[in-house]
Image 1 (tube, rainbow, N blue to C red):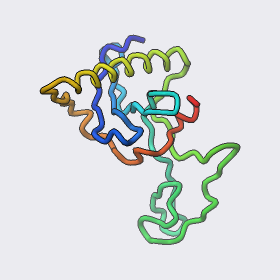
Image 2 (image 1 turned 180 degrees about the vertical axis):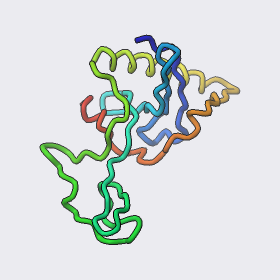
Image 3 (image 1 turned 120 degrees about the vertical axis):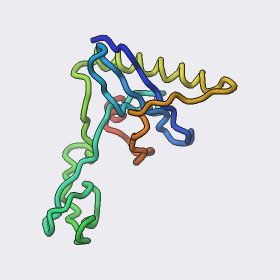
Amino acid sequence: MNITEVRVKLTEAKKNRLQAFCSITIDNDFVVRDLKVIEGHKGAFVAMPSRKLTDRCPKCGGKNHIMAQYCNDCGAKLDEKRASRGTGRLKLHADTAHPINSKCREEIQEKVLAAYNEEVENSKKPGYKPPKFEDLEDFDYEDLNEDTETEKTNK
């Protein structure tokens, strides 16, 4: 695998743990968007793209986030025990793309963090203008302070 391009968009709110959104291109052929650089307890790390887990309302069939107490569509109260905790913390997100082995994860993290650090240094220069990337403009800034499944595995 050869990461041929890394694009970084720094977030504006530095008080949040989310520091940047990234997009990587692999072998000039395949793009993975919505990687996140998050400031964790042991320093910055790269979180893979993920989606919120949802389930359906038993009354109307409407889709709801797994932690919702009431249905978004009909307003019915949802069962509090519909999300199982299993052996650890409640799983709220599922990765949409992720490396299969640690070598791949380390390579992605190394290249993304290098590009992130370079962008942070560039942002300190006078006259800095953030890069414009159409594919980085539509990121979902929701849940900026939530723990991600990736961070839990990195602790």
